Amino acid sequence: MKLYKIKKSLIDKRGLYANCDIKEGTKIIEYKGKIISVRQSEIDPKFDNDKAIYLFNINKRYDLDGNFKYNIARLINHSCDPNCEVYGVGLKVWVYAIRNINKNEELSYDYGFSYDKDFKKYPCKCGSKNCAGYILREGSRWRIKKKTKSK
Ligand SMILES: C[S@@+](CC[C@H](N)C(=O)[O-])C[C@H]1O[C@@H](n2cnc3c(N)ncnc32)[C@H](O)[C@@H]1O
Ligand SMILES: [Zn+2]
Image (cartoon, rainbow, N blue to C red):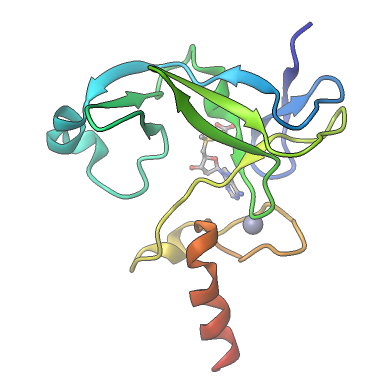
């Protein structure tokens, strides 16, 4: 049985949802795509910003471009309180559960966007209690909180 299903999302258009209860540590879906060299991704204007959301680094030499229709995992939305993480094992990239996930919960991971002049272009609609308001990687969210406090 597939561990995920595609459904209309409360966060944005479509998303992936748990098709059954999923235990922490489970490999849920492969993040499929084309392996390209890091050199190639550095010079290709297609990836020329920090928000290249379909690009994953595999190791020093290779990246994975997941911007293809056959890559179902690309439908996973960002959350400030994610239940998944995406990382490489060998030359493959997998989406893992980082906690137990209940059937029908939306799958999400931290897109890892950096804090830069464009951060306001990416409002976050994840709806979690700790939502930063913008799609930003966990390590950068304190910058926004500080800004709000000093107002
Ligand atoms: C990789 S796609 C995710 C799938 C998308 N929901 C769809 O139906 O095509 C990434 C895009 O989804 C949207 N998205 C993902 N997570 C979001 C969030 N937490 N808040 C607002 N928009 C989000 C953004 O537009 C982002 O550029
Ligand atoms: Zn959020």
